[in-house]
Structure formats: C-alpha cells, structure tokens
Amino acid sequence: MELIDVDKVTASCSGIKTNCIIKRSKEKLPAMLEGSTGPIIRAVASLDNSQILTPTYPTVYTNIANSTNFRYNKTLYYWINDNYLYIPNVEWDACRLQALFDDDITFYNCPEDGSPCSLAQDRDMPVPDYLFGEIEQLALKELITTGSIPTDGADDSQNVLR
Image 1 (tube, rainbow, N blue to C red):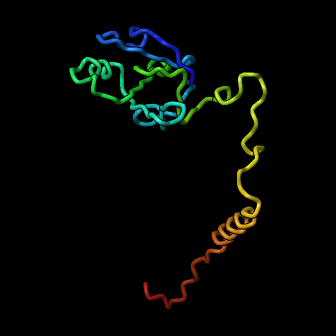
Image 2: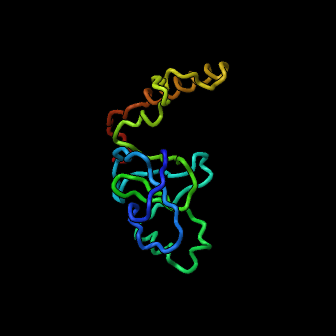
Image 3: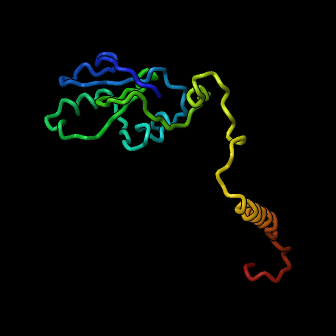
C-alpha cells in the first residue's frame, strides 16, 4: 500500500505533543472480513517484512506517545480509522498489508502500466521436473487411501461391545 504524509488532526491524534510524522494509506482500504475483534489482519509490515507493526487505536497511541518513557519505545504501531491505514513515526513510502479481503484487490497486485495480471495457475511452477512424478504418486496415494476406508461391518451378534 502506498503511504502519504498527513497531519495529527487527520489521524485523530491531536493530543500528541512531540514531533510525530504520521503516514496514511493513499487509498481507502478494501473491505475486509470481520472477526470478533475487528478486521482480520495477519500483518502490517515494511515492504521487506523486516519490521512488523503492532495494532493499536489513536487514543491509545496518543497516551503512549505522551508518556515519559516513549523515547525508549522502539515498537512501531498502526491503526485503522475511516477505512484508512495510519502508521506513525516511519519514513516509508509504502507498506505491506496481509489480510483477508472481501473486495477485489487485483488493482494492488497488477502493474501500473495497464498490462493485465497473469493468473497464478498460468505461471511457471518452481519445482524441478523430476519431482513431478513423485508429487503425482503421493497425491494419488492420498486420494486412493481416503477412498478405500472400509465401512463398518454388519452386526453379527458376535460383537464384544454389545
């Protein structure tokens, strides 16, 4: 997701007294599947996944940022407000968001030059040719095993559990 700079008021953090750079997603987030605790998000991270962000709320982040020992806090945070992703204190131009989306997100994955996206099943698979035979045999074995499970025999009055 591409990020842009916003002010503290837009990010609902007007109570922060320190210098704080807040980034926001350029576009609104697509609709996500909801769980009992909100949107189902696996991770928000830097593009290379070297820094994972911690979810929070604007009011909680304001309290954390105004605490006396905040300068020692190296944790990176994010929150979602009005279907935008907000990330304070980062210098990134983009971030990685892994979530269960309800809407179509192909425009995030496709190149901007207008060329169509390729389907995953049409791409080359990075598996050596000599392994395809073994993979096929293991798949067939699994299918045959599940299809050949014996059924329970007829009750012949000889059952010990009777």
